[in-house]
Length: 451
Image (tube, rainbow, N blue to C red; front, side, top):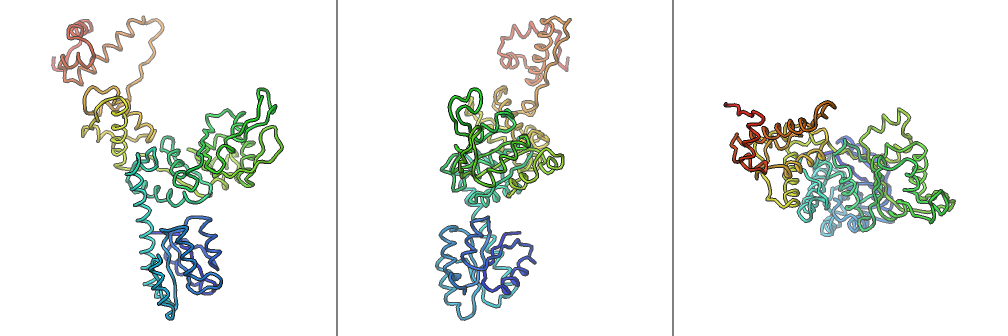
């Protein structure tokens, strides 16, 4: 498993040799020449394991391990020690150090120890996520559901990204759940007790987006009878989620870039700089690199937002997650509409797995809700999940009554067919009596396939 390893040593020769060795195992390496610099590196971004020399001036490896343990209690910490300091290293194990390696390190031993530490960290993060799923309605309140490999990778990335203040760009097709991922990042961060403010840039008038985000002063424009804080100020100390950021105009992008770089804003119609402490998480279903090439999105803003890229996989890439999500939505809508939990027939499950779901999780959710609302039995059939064909508008010369008759006849035939042409069950499903059903059959010359 590729990991990010923080190497700490005050000897540049030893540090570089260790870097080359760890990089040869396909890990990403971050270097620090002192304990203080190591703590700064940890604050700047996610790290999977720390590998530090024991003897260093000012802050030695033991003191560093204690500081790291206080701030990141489940981050694996490895010590490299000389033979004379083995007793100190063993004592450090009782204080939470994961393991130690004696100088000069045996290559195979070091690689194996590093791999164990990385796996320990991964398992702890996964266990934390599973506990969160069991303890609430899913992972972070509004549920992220799935156990496929690509979703486990996403959970792991969320867990590593959340504690930082880095700007995050979430990409993925429409309907994949990008906003849920943004919520997950916020509620796993140290800003969780502060506001999470969201704004859909695509749904906000281009002329209003600046005043919505930055606020405005009294008299800034017609109708501005009082000053108003924008969403940046409202989110101070918390997280601002900018959904569909690609839909904004270049002029606004310039102003947004300044706020991200300097941490200050000016309200519309104002000149007083207002400092804000806001973590920005943005999302888009577009390929922003292509938008940059086409001149529709600023390149500098693209790289400023894309400090940590998070890609949400499409539903078609998630395998059996389709069935997990379907059952989750079945329970939700059965409870909401007062029915008993529905079951999926084998044919319905096969239909769910075979469907491409171009609208992703949102399309699946709507399909399940429709099946629960319109279904006539305690189980969901494949036919219940198919999107009804939208009726074509009748020609102007066709009488409205003829159009209604045609649509009603088609519905009666569909219900008869789904009930195996048992007319008593069909009448009940149509909420009419048998006599009315028989009149309809005679009126429209409806015949069963066996007649």
